[in-house]
Image (cartoon, rainbow, N blue to C red; front, side):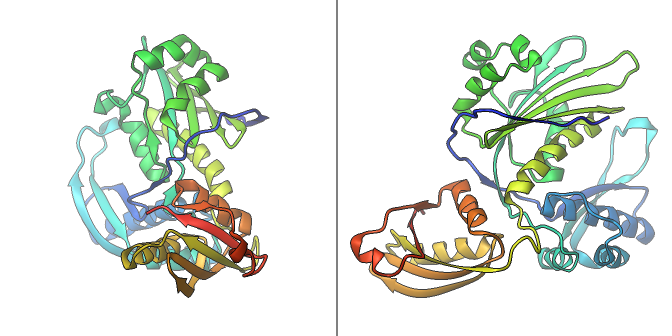
Length: 351
């Protein structure tokens, strides 16, 4: 059962700590054996997972472009390998098929299927996860691997850079476990300030009398609060559902949606480009943004670089994307700069 509640609230200002996510085009799928048929089936499941991760949204399996891609899913593989699967639940047998898909092939499928595209530079998610299995505990960066693995795997499958709290004396004073379990907004946001994440994901998880895992999730992002309630037979699936919901909220804010807006042109002036190396890094940075379609250098003057950009989203999305990792900071125009025209945007490069 899913219940979603949207509540407006005042969310404390945080220092940006966006991270570039690794493994967007990788997947790991359990298959029965190493036969070609099993690999093809695993490649199909892996392709669905990678498309979900790269877009931020569930994949429409009835999309004609997706159907066509699934028929030849193994041809999109850049490389693959097998890994022994141990201690599988329910006496399952099999091996892990580890796959890396070719990035350009995935981007081509996304374009043909007219799916959203969410770049690798993504907001960090601070997780406050309290679990009761007889005793209540908080999942922290010091928790044992077995405890945090379901959360870590769910974050990897959805392409979310998570931060687990240290939950030291400072955290426990600001946010006692009883208040975390009760999901009190004030103490949660106060304790979150030190981590500087762009979003905060909170969960209260326990097993009911029927052996079902129950989870109440709250997600804080951009002055809003979202609530999700899920029930699952195993903890890994419950974690994945919570992380999936958080990812969709973020993808709605940052993913470039096809057809949502026409391509636009943006002209920018970037100050602080003090060397050839700095110019090269700046150009590479602009080219790697998911929202940019074309990057054209129009002029270099002293420590200033001028670019004409074609973007695949709105100007607001472009500014929001730059605001994620603070590499290009908005700056005021000088009197001479104003003469270049009213539509020029001004930034300072932070290498």
